[in-house]
Image 1 (cartoon, rainbow, N blue to C red):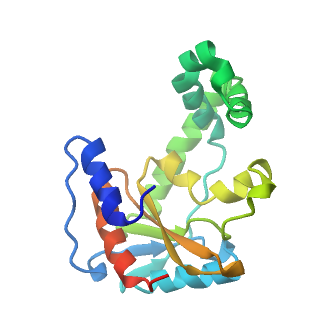
Image 2 (cartoon, helix red, strand yellow; image 1 turned 90 degrees about the horizontal axis):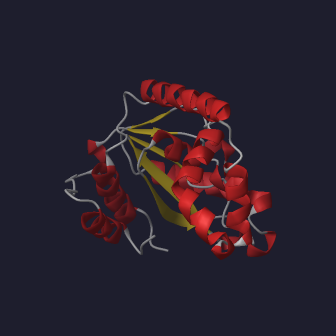
Length: 214
């Protein structure tokens, strides 16, 4: 998280060895596929469409959301946390501990099936986005929900447009794009192909300047 796209780029230069910023002169220099706006609430959809209009070369794409890949993600989470979970279980919050307990139950067979599903998803996505440089979607279908709701009732709704890029291993950038429902800001997501982090940031910086202030 950062205050602006430029700070995100600066963070990447520090955190990623060999990262080099990309140069992009105009939003017309990239082809953009727009997806999932029909799933967003009305004012969020309007704001995302307005952001998409900043790109002269845009097309509507029918892209699948990620299904049946969760167990593979759970297996990876379990592997990353294995030693810490073994030695410092009491240090985990109840919310995170609950998720790790579920991740630890993923079987080899479940992980293998989900891994194969993920590879098919990546192949299908590559085919469907072959003619565009970037994909633009809502970050969430709604504005920020009330904190009192807690995570569990809204988790799937919050993650439905962001998790796919985790499954794809693709870079994605979220930007506020104007007030929507309840006067709260909508968010637009700009994503690239795996490895195209610099292009996403370059286009995001131009989009940030093109969007209306506030």
